[in-house]
Image (spheres, rainbow, N blue to C red):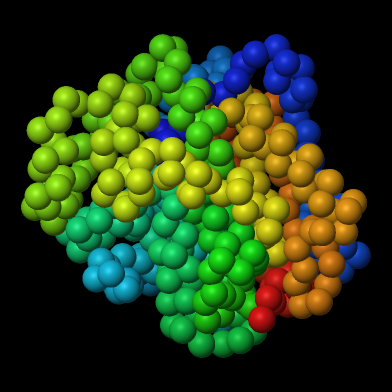
Length: 404
């Protein structure tokens, strides 16, 4: 794993547990349009956790150790550079299956804060999608993987513009208006993805080239409410997670970042002991925010999730030890209320609710190790896009999400 952003402890309090200690799907009321109906009716099999490796913490830690098989498949691998407006450069790892055609679609994969293109889950997702003939782009965010030597700045939860830059790059590379583009993110990457879609839906971001081809989206374990996550991470019970993330983030700092005078000045200060202190000392100033509270407020996807007009599935677990489930139940209530009031986002002149929230009773923070020691989200990703890109009703997902 442990790919998280400013993550936190999943509330195990009785009030939250009583509300969600069951495998449930909370769905906003969908429009009768075929694409949204497909999303609303998509069967999601319940997660059956390992008989011994149970509980949120153990699932999180063991799930992080799930690697990938040595089978490399027959996809053709290429690397692409995506130059950003501020001079930083991202690297996208393109895996194109044999006999791929634009009609089979492409999916952008976004990792968590401790990940990169080679993270176990990124490779597993890539291979499962390639088996369906779907082309994949595993993106290394700023300061991560092969992007590290090309970036003077850092990735963080609010980098929605980087997600949109990657989507536009894919749209220009696959220059076929009928070729669908999906996107999925895990933890930090999931928040970035939801934030990007919500900002486009609300008009805060201009839709990039190819946005009318985007959808559906899949967000796994997103820390959507960063302040809530940060509050929970202050718990002494999560001391190990704070230590792990801070150690990793400091160790991973890229050479160009280390050359910055402001970063060197930050290193001379006392070492932070919690992620909140880290965000105050490093993340917020390096990313141009006034302080950590400003960073949390501006970068939390929960603030714009109700504005998402692209069919989107959000998946989390009630026992996630890092991301409180309350942010998801609150979002689901808000989505249902907006739909009932007729204020849900509109796409192509059509009124519909585009977001579905699925809360599993167990799974930890993107652990989801099943009884056979395979990953439940591996199956979910495969089935989700295998169905979306293969069935004609799902094709209307991209048409329904045209905001222009």
